[in-house]
Length: 159
Image (cartoon, rainbow, N blue to C red; front, side, top):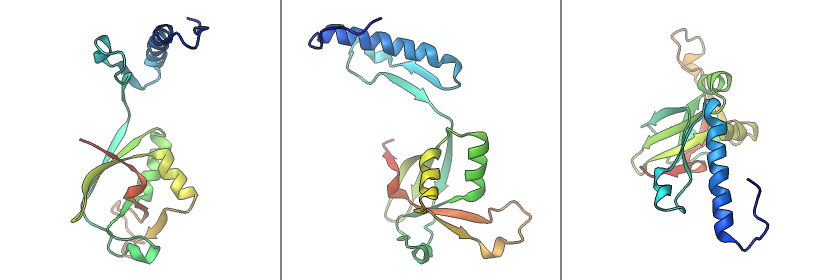
């Protein structure tokens, strides 16, 4: 469907947008990304267009990193993500989203972090790497290092 010629013809543009949404959903079917149209659009064409299901991992973070001030972070807002998890995500799930389930004394909430954003913060040296002294020779599978982030860098999700 070609785009309407008249920029003032709202109905034609809404119909064009609806057609484009349908094409997008069809095109994405073989991508591995699960997308479906919002069924509420049948009654209200102005609701959000689609629902999307992404690969996700949950990080339950219940203990503040109390010594994060050594790296320039306020422990009240600091979280860690294991370096080995970041490496594994990059290798196996480059489009993964992390749900950060944080339960601190002064904050309880869920933040969402894309792997792209995590990698970018590491590249820009905003995230700092902390090596665990007691795990230097660990053979049990414990992470030997983690990256420190400020959870406010990630969007909050309302559940």
